[in-house]
Length: 187
Image (cartoon, rainbow, N blue to C red):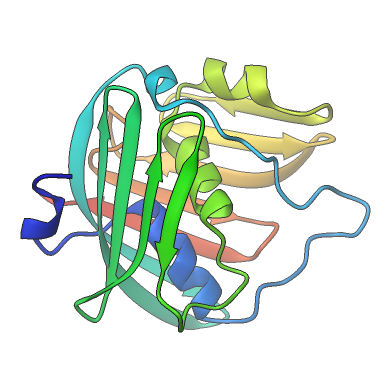
Protein backbone atom coordinates (compact mmCIF):
# COMPACT_ATOMS: atom_id res chain seq x y z
CA UNK A 1 0.00 0.00 0.00
CA UNK A 2 3.03 2.21 -0.29
CA UNK A 3 1.49 4.53 -2.89
CA UNK A 4 -2.25 4.13 -2.34
CA UNK A 5 -2.48 6.97 0.16
CA UNK A 6 -0.62 9.48 -2.01
CA UNK A 7 -3.46 10.04 -4.52
CA UNK A 8 -7.18 10.63 -4.46
CA UNK A 9 -8.53 7.30 -5.74
CA UNK A 10 -11.63 5.03 -6.18
CA UNK A 11 -12.48 1.28 -6.39
CA UNK A 12 -15.31 -1.16 -7.05
CA UNK A 13 -15.97 -2.44 -3.54
CA UNK A 14 -16.27 1.05 -2.18
CA UNK A 15 -18.90 1.79 -4.78
CA UNK A 16 -20.91 -1.06 -3.36
CA UNK A 17 -20.58 0.68 -0.02
CA UNK A 18 -22.01 3.85 -1.51
CA UNK A 19 -24.80 1.86 -3.08
CA UNK A 20 -25.77 0.64 0.33
CA UNK A 21 -25.41 4.14 1.78
CA UNK A 22 -27.69 5.64 -0.84
CA UNK A 23 -30.74 3.66 0.17
CA UNK A 24 -31.91 0.88 2.39
CA UNK A 25 -30.45 -2.46 1.54
CA UNK A 26 -33.19 -4.69 0.30
CA UNK A 27 -33.11 -8.22 1.58
CA UNK A 28 -32.81 -10.94 -1.04
CA UNK A 29 -35.64 -13.41 -1.46
CA UNK A 30 -35.98 -15.50 1.71
CA UNK A 31 -35.75 -18.77 -0.20
CA UNK A 32 -32.29 -17.94 -1.56
CA UNK A 33 -28.89 -17.60 0.04
CA UNK A 34 -28.10 -13.88 0.48
CA UNK A 35 -24.41 -13.96 -0.41
CA UNK A 36 -22.08 -16.50 -1.97
CA UNK A 37 -19.40 -16.33 0.71
CA UNK A 38 -16.58 -16.10 -1.88
CA UNK A 39 -13.13 -15.60 -0.42
CA UNK A 40 -10.76 -16.49 -3.23
CA UNK A 41 -7.04 -16.13 -2.53
CA UNK A 42 -5.49 -13.03 -4.14
CA UNK A 43 -2.96 -15.20 -5.95
CA UNK A 44 -5.83 -16.85 -7.89
CA UNK A 45 -6.34 -13.53 -9.70
CA UNK A 46 -3.22 -14.44 -11.67
CA UNK A 47 -1.76 -10.92 -11.92
CA UNK A 48 -0.55 -7.96 -9.87
CA UNK A 49 -1.89 -4.45 -10.34
CA UNK A 50 -2.54 -1.14 -8.65
CA UNK A 51 -5.44 0.96 -9.88
CA UNK A 52 -7.20 4.20 -9.02
CA UNK A 53 -10.84 4.48 -9.98
CA UNK A 54 -13.88 6.73 -9.78
CA UNK A 55 -17.12 5.01 -8.87
CA UNK A 56 -20.72 6.03 -9.34
CA UNK A 57 -23.65 4.15 -7.87
CA UNK A 58 -27.25 4.58 -8.94
CA UNK A 59 -30.02 3.33 -6.68
CA UNK A 60 -33.64 4.38 -6.23
CA UNK A 61 -33.14 7.48 -8.43
CA UNK A 62 -30.13 8.65 -6.40
CA UNK A 63 -26.51 8.90 -7.60
CA UNK A 64 -23.51 8.75 -5.24
CA UNK A 65 -19.83 8.88 -6.11
CA UNK A 66 -16.70 7.54 -4.44
CA UNK A 67 -12.93 7.38 -4.86
CA UNK A 68 -10.81 4.32 -4.00
CA UNK A 69 -7.52 2.54 -4.57
CA UNK A 70 -7.06 -1.17 -5.10
CA UNK A 71 -3.75 -3.01 -5.10
CA UNK A 72 -3.21 -6.72 -5.62
CA UNK A 73 0.43 -7.64 -5.15
CA UNK A 74 1.50 -11.26 -4.83
CA UNK A 75 -0.66 -12.90 -2.21
CA UNK A 76 -2.08 -9.67 -0.76
CA UNK A 77 -5.08 -7.49 -1.63
CA UNK A 78 -5.35 -3.96 -0.23
CA UNK A 79 -8.26 -1.57 -0.70
CA UNK A 80 -8.78 1.98 0.55
CA UNK A 81 -12.09 3.79 0.01
CA UNK A 82 -12.54 7.56 0.26
CA UNK A 83 -15.74 9.57 0.47
CA UNK A 84 -15.70 13.36 0.69
CA UNK A 85 -11.90 13.20 1.05
CA UNK A 86 -12.06 10.96 4.12
CA UNK A 87 -11.09 7.32 4.41
CA UNK A 88 -14.29 5.37 5.07
CA UNK A 89 -13.16 1.80 4.51
CA UNK A 90 -9.99 -0.23 4.23
CA UNK A 91 -9.55 -3.94 3.54
CA UNK A 92 -6.55 -6.21 3.65
CA UNK A 93 -6.85 -9.84 2.54
CA UNK A 94 -4.10 -12.44 2.20
CA UNK A 95 -6.26 -15.41 1.21
CA UNK A 96 -6.66 -16.55 4.80
CA UNK A 97 -7.52 -13.56 6.93
CA UNK A 98 -9.65 -10.55 6.03
CA UNK A 99 -8.81 -7.47 8.08
CA UNK A 100 -10.96 -4.39 7.74
CA UNK A 101 -11.49 -0.93 9.14
CA UNK A 102 -14.64 1.08 8.63
CA UNK A 103 -15.73 4.56 9.56
CA UNK A 104 -18.14 4.53 12.49
CA UNK A 105 -20.79 6.29 10.40
CA UNK A 106 -20.86 3.47 7.86
CA UNK A 107 -24.14 1.51 8.03
CA UNK A 108 -23.90 -1.92 9.67
CA UNK A 109 -25.10 -3.64 6.47
CA UNK A 110 -21.88 -2.60 4.67
CA UNK A 111 -19.69 -5.62 5.36
CA UNK A 112 -16.09 -6.20 4.30
CA UNK A 113 -16.97 -9.73 3.18
CA UNK A 114 -19.60 -8.41 0.76
CA UNK A 115 -17.22 -5.80 -0.66
CA UNK A 116 -14.55 -8.47 -1.20
CA UNK A 117 -17.07 -10.79 -2.83
CA UNK A 118 -18.31 -8.18 -5.33
CA UNK A 119 -14.72 -7.27 -6.19
CA UNK A 120 -13.85 -10.90 -6.82
CA UNK A 121 -16.99 -11.53 -8.88
CA UNK A 122 -16.00 -8.62 -11.11
CA UNK A 123 -12.24 -9.10 -11.41
CA UNK A 124 -11.21 -12.70 -10.80
CA UNK A 125 -11.01 -15.26 -13.63
CA UNK A 126 -14.33 -16.99 -14.26
CA UNK A 127 -12.72 -20.43 -13.77
CA UNK A 128 -11.56 -19.56 -10.22
CA UNK A 129 -15.03 -18.24 -9.35
CA UNK A 130 -16.88 -21.20 -10.89
CA UNK A 131 -14.88 -23.69 -8.81
CA UNK A 132 -15.87 -21.87 -5.60
CA UNK A 133 -19.59 -21.38 -6.32
CA UNK A 134 -22.13 -23.19 -4.10
CA UNK A 135 -24.68 -25.54 -5.67
CA UNK A 136 -27.28 -23.74 -7.77
CA UNK A 137 -24.98 -20.85 -8.74
CA UNK A 138 -23.41 -20.42 -12.19
CA UNK A 139 -21.19 -17.78 -13.78
CA UNK A 140 -20.51 -17.18 -17.50
CA UNK A 141 -18.19 -14.97 -19.48
CA UNK A 142 -19.49 -13.79 -22.85
CA UNK A 143 -16.68 -11.66 -24.21
CA UNK A 144 -16.84 -8.33 -22.39
CA UNK A 145 -19.89 -9.40 -20.36
CA UNK A 146 -20.11 -11.60 -17.26
CA UNK A 147 -23.39 -13.09 -15.99
CA UNK A 148 -24.15 -14.59 -12.57
CA UNK A 149 -27.12 -16.94 -12.14
CA UNK A 150 -28.84 -18.62 -9.22
CA UNK A 151 -31.07 -21.54 -10.24
CA UNK A 152 -31.01 -20.23 -13.84
CA UNK A 153 -32.28 -16.79 -12.76
CA UNK A 154 -30.00 -13.87 -13.66
CA UNK A 155 -28.76 -12.24 -10.43
CA UNK A 156 -26.12 -9.83 -11.79
CA UNK A 157 -24.52 -8.72 -15.03
CA UNK A 158 -21.13 -7.08 -15.36
CA UNK A 159 -20.05 -5.29 -18.54
CA UNK A 160 -16.46 -4.28 -19.32
CA UNK A 161 -15.18 -1.71 -21.82
CA UNK A 162 -11.91 -3.63 -22.32
CA UNK A 163 -9.45 -6.13 -20.95
CA UNK A 164 -7.91 -6.49 -18.46
CA UNK A 165 -11.15 -6.29 -16.50
CA UNK A 166 -9.83 -3.82 -13.93
CA UNK A 167 -8.98 -1.22 -16.57
CA UNK A 168 -11.39 0.96 -18.48
CA UNK A 169 -15.02 1.08 -17.40
CA UNK A 170 -16.92 -1.63 -15.53
CA UNK A 171 -20.71 -1.55 -15.11
CA UNK A 172 -22.18 -3.90 -12.52
CA UNK A 173 -25.97 -4.31 -12.56
CA UNK A 174 -27.06 -6.08 -9.39
CA UNK A 175 -30.61 -7.30 -10.00
CA UNK A 176 -30.92 -8.78 -6.51
CA UNK A 177 -30.09 -5.60 -4.58
CA UNK A 178 -31.29 -3.19 -7.29
CA UNK A 179 -28.30 -0.97 -7.92
CA UNK A 180 -25.99 -0.07 -10.78
CA UNK A 181 -22.31 0.54 -10.17
CA UNK A 182 -20.11 2.24 -12.76
CA UNK A 183 -16.35 2.12 -12.21
CA UNK A 184 -13.97 4.22 -14.29
CA UNK A 185 -10.26 3.56 -13.98
CA UNK A 186 -8.02 6.61 -13.82
CA UNK A 187 -5.74 7.09 -16.81
